[in-house]
Image (tube, rainbow over all chains, first blue to last red; front, side):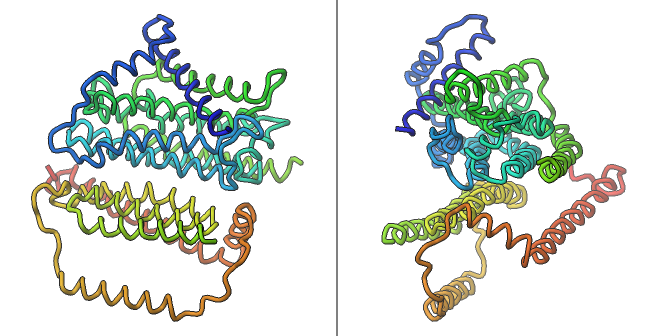
Length: 298
Length: 178
């Protein structure tokens, strides 16, 4: 039952996000557009390029979707509304999302196309930049909660949300999450107008539909992770806990899209330099500050 | 208990299966990712054996490590896609001999060693994580810190070795790679 509710919530969030994205892009609010677009993809021919690595080509979109959903499995919507309340939840979401990289590399290498391959390897470079900024802020979150269990992490924010307790960690994690979801301005693996679609370039029809669904699901999963780790999860007045979780998740997801609309695409080398020379020292500082706060403030 | 043994066996066989694929394919990326999935299967074996933290850590670490290995293999191997028909094997007889001997020794050790009594009830996952943390910050701290500093030193040294070559190339002292 919990599984069905969480999956339904995930699907509904993806749909709302797709509608919002369409609304901000075209200026028209069309609730049926994502469904129609999906059906149109199903109706189109799904072309297989010449001499592909067939196993990678077929596996990549499915693996991408599975890991995006797996990441959401440990994120609670309400105190009891979580698919798997693992003792290592905060670590598990890292493990699941690490396979996004594997899926993107597969999608890049599989079709045997130059643009796709460059897109795939670019994402590996991107990972070298953002990976530590995902893990280190989560370390500070776990330090405050004294647990890796996601429900305990939300519980630890009852009096004060982590966005106030550790704002530096929130900013770093937000940026790293956008890089992980390769949304603009970190959309180097796709790079429309420069790489001709990158890892998406050789995919058509049903495979492209799965790939796009997976990418939107990943955005929702990451927005949910930000909600759980920094925005107090289900905490909030009047409304039921699950409603707060959904509202916050959608607000974060929309803010991720909005930020991307007003910033130019960042260069790979700049991203790497800023993450390593500025991001990681700041993440270390965040860990030290949180450590002192945990020990000093009762 | 039987279900646990069944899943350990299934993931163990999967690990061996993917391990075989590593050597059966000519594509460097396939080879690297087959090794990744072999290691992921080992992580799943940890999970089946109720060691949650180690399992999840193994699954997480291998994804990035093997992907990085894949790009290095693509950069340095002459036929990374395996489509040029190049034979990249050598010393076949020696390799087969060494493989058979190593497998034999492993099996003998596995059956001869007294592994002690089987743990009836594993502590819950949260307790295991706590115990592991205490171990890492207690008795084993010196070992892990030494290993960490050594790896960091090697990384800095490797970067330092790489930079002057690039700098010289830029000044025209060395022939440019292009």
